[in-house]
Length: 517
View (cartoon, helix red, strand yellow):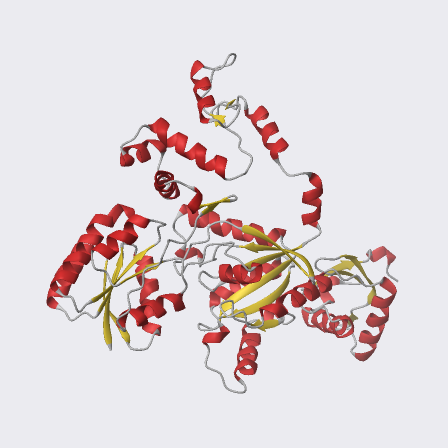
């Protein structure tokens, strides 16, 4: 058993790495530290075989010094530098410090374990280049070294002034670099200059912004609202033509929802056939709902990748609260929901809560069991797994299951056919005559319930709306229409029309007592 030490300043990430390593054969996490200097002291008093050393811009010096010191004193210890930054300097610094390998956090769990195994076998793994960053149509290779450094600081949320201080340059220079990157993106640019609070002629300072080369600046005042109308008109003019928007409205909108780290973004990338969204084992990588359009022989689809939805008690950061809100909003605007669960973890209570929201919103749904390639199987593994899940998803007895692997692509090709089927079922409309034929047959087989001498009378049934299919039942007394009999009628309708993957709604209406005879 190899002893592993994790050095990472974020507790959440440390916990995540621990869970990955404990799943791998032959490794055991003996220490999880937040300080690079503490790792040097720990190596003096403990037997360590492998270290995962987090190195970022803000702790690069400390992390690299610790790597260099440990490799100098204990050359047998293998060290993998872990970073999430697109940074050649960290790559080269890690090599100079004699680190054994480097791993970018945008890789998945299997990639990390593979790097660990190969490093322990004596290989040195350093990417030939960092993973690319894109802004519009521009890639990281289109940017200068200084522009990339500015971009990294922007991603971390630093203001222009703080970036200027970090890089020892003027604030104006930072703005020039940002303007150059935006121009390379190939996207329309609207330049708004805030704090123009006085009515009338704009301040002379406004004209300095013409030097950025981004077109006419719009003087606005966020405090008073001045100039916002002209700016929004310019935004509207820059939007794509309505014909393009109408084409997208014809597509089936598919929200991919679930807990963090179940493989939602990996699934989107597999379907799209390219790296459309960032994939990382770090919980919370996906912050906003991201649309990806896919067109194939089954039709046109808009895949909405969403942030992982954790329990409310676990959500403390404001940004994560907004991310979860955007995930729920994505469900609201979707036609179909893919509820993704992790096959290696099985069903959890949070899975039912995520699925419950899609059910309450009346969305067609499919339960996607991802990471099926990691499950040890026999002849009945899938059958037993599905039976167990159906017990947990008893409140969604209509939902179909698909076992797949976003990593290998196993059964992913079946997904679009299922999406199209459940979408059509969610949009189905049944004529009133056909419904009442089914109603007559059902009430003949099983008499409606009665209470204290009063029997439920069902006069007729009609379907006023779809998405989901909604049926209005007219009865003599609503209190006699027990939910068990409603379930019986629902089963009769499903037996006739299928309605796979879609919930069904019943609205019970009493006829006016004066009209009853």
